[in-house]
Amino acid sequence: MRWLRTVLAVVPALALAGAGLSHPHFLTLESAASWQHLHLLLLPVFPLLAVGFLLPLWRRPGIDVAGFATVTAWVGAFVYATFYTGLDLVAGLAAGTVARNTHSAADLGAAVQPLFEVGDRLGHIGVYGFAIAAAAMSVVLFLRHGVAALAVAVVLLSASYSFLDSHIFSPRGVYTMVAFAAGFGLAAWISAPTANSMPRATTTTGQKGEPTCG
Image 1: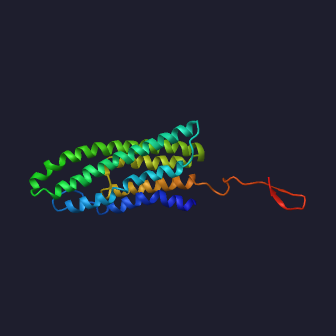
Image 2: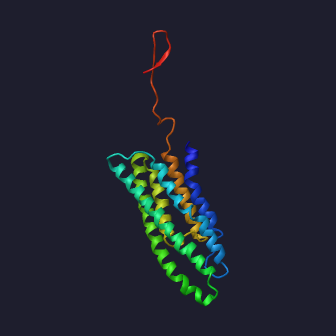
């Protein structure tokens, strides 16, 4: 169970890291088709980064600090998934579509620049939501699992800062995604229930020496 949770937490970030290796650095008439197709394929993948927040927090929040931080992390993850998907749609899919239908390199910049500006604003809001979710999840993990949560906080918050302008562009964007995978993997690992933490039924001995649940 612990290994499965960890794998599920890291796969989206690693998939984005792999995609970053082939992401064009610039949108040109020549790269327009690959730019469009890549962002279409990544449309369902970017929101899945939020799985890294949901798995370690998969329980009913209580009325305490950890419960408040859990809800805050959920809201931050929702903001990330919503607004960063907007970046992918506007500066990725839409800009690539416009570029594929532009016949002059001289006209391309003017055609896609407004899309990039809107996409950047949406992406920044998404990253801010991501950072809030990372900080809030780290609080929950610290309260429940101790100092190992500090490593999660350092990795995810540092990578969030890079995420503001690195997207998944190689090489820094790829390193950013790998850092997300590491942070989410550690969070999933330390938060996974273990055999020692699972509630167990106690047993008593009946009149004939047979164990009965009690």
